[in-house]
Each structure stands twice: as structure tokens, then as C-alpha cells.
Length: 382
Picture (tube, rainbow, N blue to C red):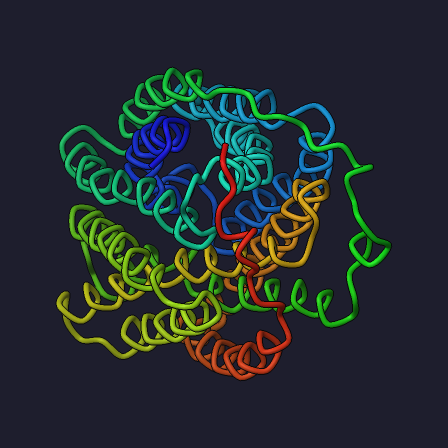
């Protein structure tokens, strides 16, 4: 692991710990502040919308002015939003903090291209999955901390502890070194300046996969508490198990061919939906949340293949487009989940299983047309 990836991994580990501490309890806290299931779905959809609007401009700017300044700016916005949520005393102020955090997610596209350049001798897929695993190692510990704090001191204090961890994460990210900017004139041919229709189809596939896999997630804490009677501590434990699943599945599937791991990750999320829907005990829910780790793994491997479709000079813009499509899925999926949940909570899981299986078939077809990685693309020094 290169020096820059090491500090990025530390920053993401502490951020994952802080975010993991509150993420499982955020829908429940929104409920405490007076939001209905439909409101929660719309709020989470608005979170995705705020993120979606910033990804493409951030990716474009990272190609022009460099990746590190945008990474720093995104981290600072996330930190500010976290403190706003921690200090909020009303639903409106809390949601405002959420939206500020969402705006800070423009960091994803510059960070994706930063990883692709700073990976040293690692393949793109391995670099993405290892960095994702570092975030999710923190995300494994976070829910345990959050569950314990929530049971003993209340959910509000969870957000205060998370904001403190985000300060530490921000300090780590300040150690990242700048990277050279690749000038657009470095593009070699006209073919490298555009994507063919099959490549555009791959971007559409990433959107469909993100939508189908995210649909069962936003209101699962509410389902487990309201329909299955789980406590906050138990829900926190499930999210910790999910973090373990993400780490292990990242490390295991990250060594496979990216297209194969992408499909296996989707199948794991379909199994999660089935187990939450039909499971009858905490053991089944725990197994389901372990398999939910396939969502982050599939996402990382899906995004890593974008690098094969574009020239390095356009990499930030391409990752920005990818992150925008993923955010669009996270705008639409929670809104639909909220509507389905109010009608019948089980419909969320039934529909997600059907959609994921359909997308798996589409994935198996479209990924066959992706270009193979060239040796020069496998090793790129920082």
C-alpha cells in the first residue's frame, strides 16, 4: 500500500466509525423527531439528490484543478454537516445538517480518481476494494458504539460522538499529497474522447444495480424495530455484522475478476432481502446483514471498471457521472421504499429481490462487452 493510500485508509476508517455509529439509527431518530415513513423516504431521497447534483461538477473540476483540494473541501463540508446534526434541536435543522453532509459527498468522484492514480502496483479493483474495506472496518465498530450510546444516553448523543470522530478523520486526510494534473491534450485519438453505446449502457447498468440493491436498505431498521421487535442495541449489532461482511466480501471478491465479483455482490444483496423478509430470528437477520456487505463490494467493483472505458484525462468526469447515477438511484429508491412500506412493509423486499435478479441477468450480458485491462493500466505509479 502506498503512503497516500495509507493515510486515505486511516481517514476513511475513522470516518466509517463515526458514520457507522449513527447511520443505522438515523431513520429511527427522524421518526423520533416526527417524520413519518413516507417523510423519511423523501428525506433520504433528498439526501441522495443533494449528493447527485455535485458529483459531475466535482469530477470535472478534479481533472482541471487537482483532486486533493476537492477531497479536502468535501471532507470539511461533511464535518460541518455532522456537527449541525449533532447540535440540532428540531427536524428542520437536523435535515439541514443531513443535506450539508450530502453536499460533501462530491468528494467521491475526486477520491475515486485519486485512488486510481495513487494505487501503486495494485490493480484498480484491488485498490478500490481495499480502500472500501478500510472504511467498512470502521463501519463495523461504529454501530456497536452507537448502539451502546443509544441505549444508555439516547440517540442524540450518538451524533455528537460521530462528529468528534469526523474531526480526527479530517486531520488524517490533510496528509494526502497532491497529484499531477493530466492535460486533456494527452488524449491520443478521437475514439478516446467518446464512449460507444455499449459503454453508455454500462453506466445505465450501474444505475439499475444501485437502485435495485439500495431499495431494501433505508427502512430496514424501521422494519426490524416495528415489525420484528428488535432493540436499538440489536440493530446496532446487525450493522456491525454488515461491516464485517463488507470487509470480508471486499477482500475475497476483490481478488476475483471485477465483472464476476460485481455479479456475486448483487446476488448477496438479493439474499439479504430474502432473509430480512422471511427470517424468523436474530440469527437469520445477522446472516442477511452479513450478505448485505455485497452492496458495497458490488459498487466498488462496478465503479472500478469505469477506469477501463476512459482516458486518464477524463477520469474525474467519468467517476463524477458514475457517482451521480448512483446518487440518483439513492434519490428514487428511498422514496419508492417509503411508499411501499406504508402500503405493506414486506413489498419492499419482494420487489427488490425481483429487480436484483433481473439486473443480474442484464449484468452478465453487458459486462461481456467491457474492454479487458491492459498491462499498462494495471500498474500506474503515484
